[in-house]
Image (cartoon, rainbow, N blue to C red):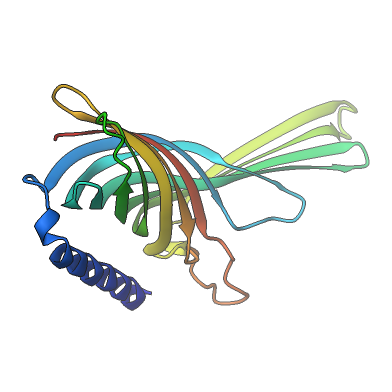
Amino acid sequence: MFKSVVLCFLIVMVFFTQIDSVMAGDKPDKPIRFGVRGGFNSATTTEDFEGATKKSRSTFGAGIFMDYFFMSSLAAQINVLYNNKGVKFEGSDDFGGITSSYKYEEKLAYLSIPVLLRYGFPTGGGVMPYVMAGPELGILMSAKAKSESSYSGILTLQEGVQQDETSSDEQDIKDQLKSTELALNFGAGVEIPMSSVVLLFDIRYGLGLTKYHKKPETGEEPNAKNNVLYVNVGVALP
């Protein structure tokens, strides 16, 4: 896994270096700019549990980025972000008048490093729509699993009445997961120049390429890959 990640990013860096040498004559006067970004994450995974309904986990991400412009419309963007990911499952069963319901949530936090190639479409008025794509390295920071279960319609023999029971538990599962993951990011956005800064609005999708659970000692490795929809707002210094 580590060798694959290193190889992937080396290929990307060589690709960017070749672009830079070809576009050297069209490079802007200030080819580098920095900024901050953050926003909404809608996270899920490719894993499924029989009988359970999978739901996305609504959370957030934020961090910094750097744009390196090969030309006014073409740039490499390196992000360093704190991203929350994960998934939710819900389900219920009915056994002879006893109803049980359960909820399970994985709360995963990653240091994400997307390296994107960004191409813009100048409109002549300063506003520039753009598309972007590239690999993302994720380094696991924390991982917790929260489970809740409730039972209703339980008849207690001692008192002969119904009672409801609810229980919840949260465990650290970081040692059960891989320390890194790899994803493919792609999306689109628009940048709007202001008086002293540049505003950016974009939507990206992070498609998981690697499974994030470790292979257990017995049984098969869970087929779980992180998939995340990012809706971000950013501010860059021109």
